[in-house]
Image (cartoon, rainbow, N blue to C red):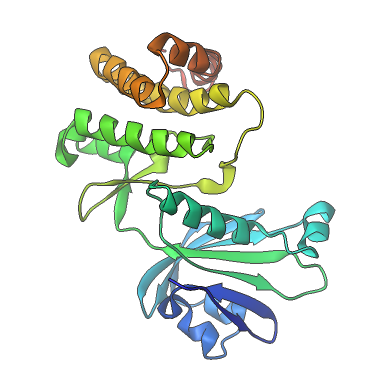
Length: 262
């Protein structure tokens, strides 16, 4: 899908799907568009997130407010968080990692160059942790299917050189239409230059922390690690060494903060 550009009086819009941003294309102001019928998901601070009603249906919008001098400075050179997440989402989809479909990004034109908006599909989904706690994983095909899907997505992510940074179960959404997993919260995704396998190991460790807190059978965990190691062309021992330090650090934090039994 080709990218299109629209310049309003006070913003620049880059979009793939005009149905997601129809009101902006018809002359609505950024504030009128963002304050239209919506459900607030996160408010205040540097980021706001909402589900907006659009002609295409519900879309997810994340508003990045750059309050630091540094963020405002790099904005003059076209560096915006919404633009980064939009392009990153396209790249991850290209390499086969399921993430929400990116639809548009918008940059407000102002002296401080401090505000940008990322627009993607509004998922009809529930997060993996909620499903596990409230319904059980059998409701979405069973634990083996879920863990196989997670491995395949993490292998695709890591083989492309990216680490996610926070692969807790709440950041895996399960689509209601087909029970497929979709990885969200991409703000922390990056390409590590040093100790790459350790960074990839942290993604595994973060997922396994929740798995063990939810008392997933150790055989399933061992099968997951073996599957991941095989696809990455490494040994299980190497993978365990990669994830070990991060796992111990995360487990300690969960014991202190949440009273976890890990």
